[in-house]
Figure 1 (tube, rainbow, N blue to C red):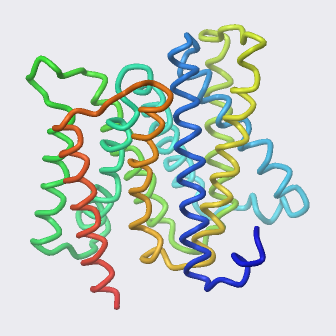
Figure 2 (cartoon, rainbow, N blue to C red):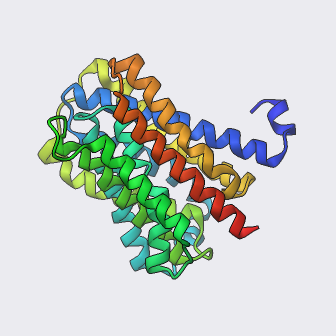
Length: 292
């Protein structure tokens, strides 16, 4: 980290770290798409993502493992691990079938689904304006998915399932409350994903070509580095400051789609993505005002 960044205000540090996390995550998704399109099963790529995170987190928590592995909510930890695993699998499965920018835009429905789910299941307030924004975002996703049209692909439902899974993961995390340590939750999620995907590998494994080894290693590293950036971002700045910058992921995904896969989003896809981003920013604005 540069001296200038170290001297920057905490909010600026948080924003830059968050953007770094999104940048690395988006590159990891592009690399995963390359591997899936090269013939490797999505579950093999997901396994690489999880095992890399588990190994690095094990090294990080080893000195204080007994304290960090203690959890007061074993069932909630298991449920949120299942939800996060589902989000990863659904998204990676979509990468070999639809455009990277489209998958990312649809998956970015999750913040609005979290707002809706928090009102339905956690008793958090949601006014009519935010409810309309959630409806608008869903309409934006419909513009991208286009059910019933000749351009519709059932694979477009996979990132939608990812959005619902991630929203479930976030709501279960909220339900656990602030008492559960962040590293504890990260480790259990990574360990669950590693165990499940490891058990599946004998049935899906494709031998890795020597020229592809670097990509598998890099996916494991990138996922963990991005996760560390994200943790540090939320330690530096409030979530309300950081949240709007999450939509840069759609921009990065569009660039990688153009550069690496020659994917040009059509007008309806761009319009749908803009509607989702606009609705998400509006909900963030309303929630920030309500919290102030």
